[in-house]
Length: 129
Image 1 (cartoon, rainbow, N blue to C red):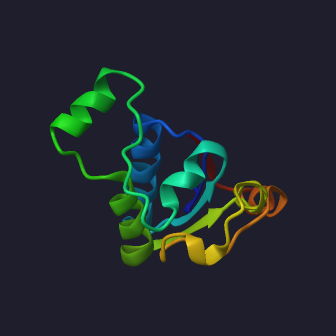
Image 2 (cartoon, rainbow, N blue to C red):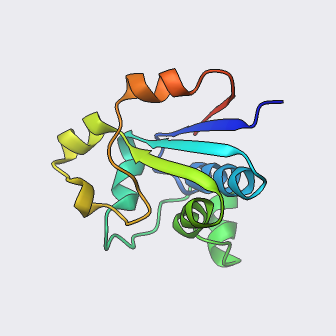
């Protein structure tokens, strides 16, 4: 099994963001090299100061909120701080949203293009949320 995990996150739904953050954090602290690519509806949740809750897509999302499951932002940050994880925002999404790198959370790296992400995703596990 490869020791490399690439995760593409495009959803703005709580369940999808939560599962992506769990895969990233568990993979990173278990010794895998983890690359997360944030695009489309996911990017907005990584803007500094944005503490809005991602909407639930179903009953599990609501239960996670009620049971105080760890927040996906915290899990992504832990993946970076405690393991070998890098989180990149999509350069196109950043441009469309009119954001700059400094507008995003500190644990988010510089923007990356999709072509570069895909070229680095070979020979490993690829997940999409």
